[in-house]
Length: 316
Image 1: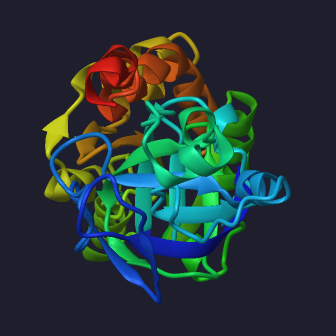
Image 2: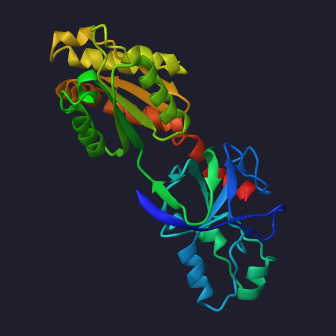
Image 3: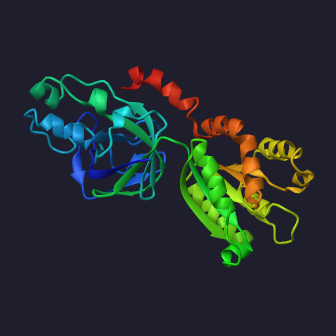
């Protein structure tokens, strides 16, 4: 994860013009910054530019104000042009997805006339809004290149501090070793409402690409994690749960008692793992290969973002 700081937030009511700095702006899901000319149902809803690159340009003698390059967000500390398509940016509640790098520079713009060149073609990037909220100068902007994982442990005894939660650190270690970035963990009792509400929050605010739950998948009357998952799920992914059970049967026939389910809500995949640290790691290990492809499909990074590369010349 890379951290930067938003130096200015800019909007304009017309396209092809410099943008004006604002004290704050509202980012609307799948739309853009409220009042900005580039809002719409397309892949270039919010533009970002590196403050450091602009400062280097200023040092060449250009008198440039924030927003002159047509950027919505001017951010220090992040070199946007080096990031891959699909990178996720998070600032407060706002979640953005990198969809295009660079654009055609119109030779008639004021900066081009004055300096004979423009940094937007090589340094400017464009994003779509995956979750809305408020943006303002001074906010931290986090860039995630890796898939983000959140781990939720369901355990009455763990929540009551009667047992040490060993499954969460074990799952986190395996996930990190497998290329995921852990963005949060949570420990809750075996309460169906609390669990479903937390899962819905993580998914609806797109806090993670992958939500791993541990515990509550057996036959105890307090084991209700699968039910809590199905309460908020949009689509089931039964093949992953079947693969976990079948892969772990040679290890122990008790895997046949697992009621784990896998499902999606919005753009997040939820996977139920057993509460035992050993069993949780074994189950997650069994699905790591198809899990990667599934998350790329769910997030749109395996097809839609690749398509945008060919669209740049037509929509620049």
